[in-house]
Amino acid sequence: MTASYSPAPAGRDPKRRDRHRSWWLLALLILLAILVATSIGVGTREVSLAEIIGALQGSTAGNGESAVAVRIPRTALAFLAGAGLGLAGAIMQGVTRNPLADPGILGVNAGAALAVVIAVAWFDITSSEAYLWTAIAGAGLATLFVYRVGSLGPGGATPLKLTLAGAATSVACASLVIAVVLPRNDIAGGIQSWQLGGVGGATFERILPALPFLAAGFAISLLSARKLNSLALGDDLAAGLGEQVALARLVASVGAVLLCGATTALCGPIGFLGLVVPHICRLLIGVDYRWLLPFSALGGASLLLASDVVGRIIARPAEIKVSIITALIGAPFFIWIVRRQRVREL
Image 1 (tube, one colour):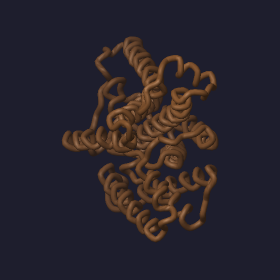
Image 2: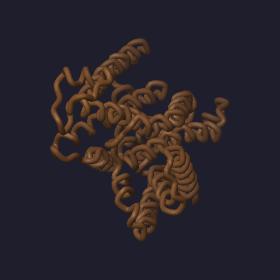
Image 3: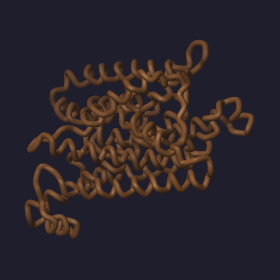
């Protein structure tokens, strides 16, 4: 059965539909503001409102204020990483017309992770800039490899072949990571912790070098909305409307690779978020990428912030990595999509 998503029942009147989407946008922004406040105020240590205000003003005199000061960059990283992965997932689903596309499922995050591990183990990279460039290069190479393998045989790059190629690439990259790390006990602990994927230990010093890459990724991705709307009509019709199909795919993919590479360098691989969020957004506001892309970014930020808060409080005083929480949410959602047979095209 062909995957199809209808706009939420807001009537056929464009003004009414846009008003419906605007209400959903307002609700999402309110939810995001609540989650940001919760992420700053809630954690393994309870803090008062006065301590939160003091920390926001720059004070770290007390233990509570120090705890809040640590949570602020962590919240910023969760916001940026969630927005980047949600937006990258929507871009990849649009470029491949594959409802199962996701930076994790298609092997993009795994390629970035493998590149970083090789660079650390064999070339002793230490700077944030080197991590970023290496992760982006690995994400780009993985994307090209998966698309090439998925294009082999009759029918070209079908959603099913891309998914299988991505899954095989992810497994292969994970095995290679183990092979690289196994003889290096000096880096094994740090690599294994980073590989789990999380936003703990974030600092603004680590985040700042990634901002130009993230900004470029967000800009390129959001500006690709109209081209993705054309691609959704099919390659032949898009070309008939004057769209340069190959160039449109390439430009949109560059935005997704920048987002995935920068996010993986900062947080490690975080899966399923880019799969879940775009689907939920389609069910709410329809398939117009001019709305879907910003909604996916905001929805991804909301989901990652919520997952991080849950991971902090359900195992106090310890924490559960955010990637584990997103996997617990995303895996059943993935199975639901497959069982609904929404696996051919968007």
